[in-house]
Length: 393
Image (cartoon, rainbow, N blue to C red; front, side, top):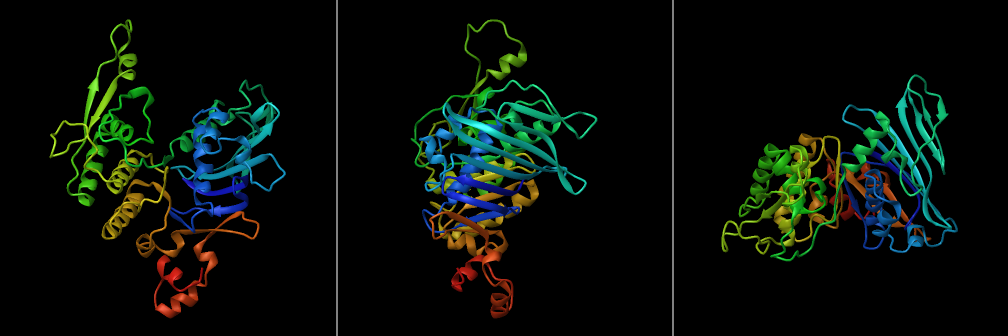
C-alpha cells in the first residue's frame, strides 16, 4: 500500500514535497493539469521494480527522454520517492533518481529505508556504480559489489529480504490503462509464464487458474452490477509439440490459454466482446483486478466512470468501497464524475491544479477548503461534490 509520494522534476510536476494517500483516493481537476502524470510516476516505478529496462519503461510515458523532465527546468534529473506499508504494517521509503547522461538514461541514485525505532534506517544506498548495504547483524552500511546495469534498479536485483519484499509489493500494483473499443473478434493466446495482467483476458486467466474461488466471487459481483454479464470460459492449450522432454513444472509454465466471452446472441463459445460496452469492460476489468490483487496492494486507473450510466455509478462506488476494505486493496483513480464525488467523502479526494508557472500541484481536498464552515452550513459532513458546489475550489 502506498502511504505517500514525493516527486521532483517529473513531467509537469516540478516539486511535490509530500502527498499522503489513504485507502481510497480520487484525483480530480481540469483536463491537462497533470492528473495522469501522478499515475505515470507510480507505473514507471512498478515496471522498474519488476525488472524492466529503464529506457523501455520510460519510452511509454516519454517517447523522447527529455519529456521526462519539467519543460522549464534546467535539470536533467527526476526523483521519485514512494512511502509504503506492507500487510504486516512495516513501513518503507524507496527513493531513486533518473538522470539523462551522455549515454542515455541511467539510475544515478537509489535508496531503500525501513522504519525502525521511530525513524527510517537505510537498508541500502546506491550512488551511480557504488553500492552499500547493511550487514545481516548490523545496521551499519558496508560497500559491496553489485553487478547490475545503470539502467536497472538495484531493488529488482539485490537479494535481500527487505528489497525483495518492497520489489514484490511495487511490482504487484495493478495499473489499468483501460482498453477502448477492442476488436470484437480478436483472439489472444495467453501463456501462463508471461500473463499480461494489465489486459482483461490476462486477469481472467490468472484468477481462473490460480485463484478459482476468487474468480467465482468476481463473477458473482460483476453479475450484481451487470445482470446480463456472461462468465468467460477459459480453455487450456497444451505446449507446442517438438519442444523436447520437459518436467511437469516446465510443461505447466508453457501452457497456453484462450478466453471465450459468451454472447447469448451468437453462442456460448463464440469469442466476442461485441456485447460489452466500454463502460461494462471497465467494470469487468476493475473487479477482476481487485480480486487478483494481493492484500495491501494498490489498483490504479483512469476515469472509471467513462461509459457508465450515472445510475450505475452509485452501485459501483458502494461495491468498490466494500471490496477495498474486504480485500485490503488500496484504490487510486482519476475522475471527472460528479456522481462519484457525490458518493465519496472529501477526505478521499486529491485536488490537482496548475500554479502560475504551469506546474502541477496536488493537495488533499480537506487541505484546500474550510470544512467546518461547510459542515456548519449543511449540519452534517459534506460530500466531495458538495464542497465543489459550494464554490470553494
